[in-house]
Length: 351
Ligand code: ADP
Image (cartoon, rainbow, N blue to C red; front, side, top):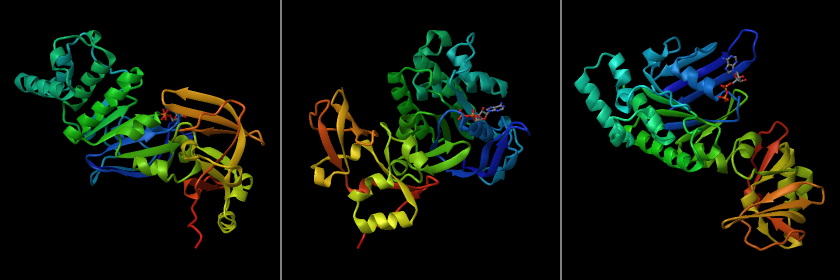
């Protein structure tokens, strides 16, 4: 099922603020899309609007060519998975999975067949007779996914489904969600505030901030080609280093810095992993190493510049000591520029 929002706005209460503003997007059939953004940006609200548990204040929602704006969740045939699994504790795993089918009046033989098929898909067949309380968090979430898939939903909606799991299980389960989505082909929308989660499993990531879509593209493009300062800073850890244009323009070729300024660039960004250790003539920044963090083979350095600004440098290959005065440069192709509104300014290389 393809999902389309056409200028959707949402206000919970007439006097309240507008939570989602003029939102338009397409979710392709058979794709897995993440909605990513900080807490309170409107991710769950967007998901609830797709589900039909909430209705928009303005705009239309389409499933394929059908206008479903006024249809409820049952009519839209959505499947939902929540952070807290929401399983029935007194029912066995098998009965939990079969529950929506029982409600729909499907006969017992068919229900059992479907439960077995889904248990195989989510790999919990050996636990069918257990109660949810006897399962680990990851296994419970597998049951919840199987249950959501039981009625062959038009679309599968997941709201922070992995937040209750520990780090190792989270990584394992996100791969599982990707596998299950690929095997079933069900269009899936996944809400998360965790960038790594979103980037690792999605065909597309929709980044939201304060109820406005910042960018909706494939994960690599979000990282390599952010549309604005918010996306540039939100993706990547440590965060992209941001400089005032005037602090670094001397290290840019004059014709390029002139053109960038003409186009309104006031900020420049460089990702921590894009720095190259260099001599002071070719340096973009020179500073004193303040903090050196070695985690496994990862070496990160924090540099304090003369201006007092802290700069993060990742993937450092040289064994600096704290207090060393060091210089770093980068290729201009690794630099991002932004105007006063935070929009990306792109310039072509000088001829
Ligand atoms: P997220 O999922 O990104 O954390 P939400 O969609 O839950 O964000 O919330 C977006 C905004 O809408 C927040 O400012 C939140 O306070 C507000 N909000 C969420 N639910 C309600 C509600 N039932 N009534 C009024 N305001 C709400």
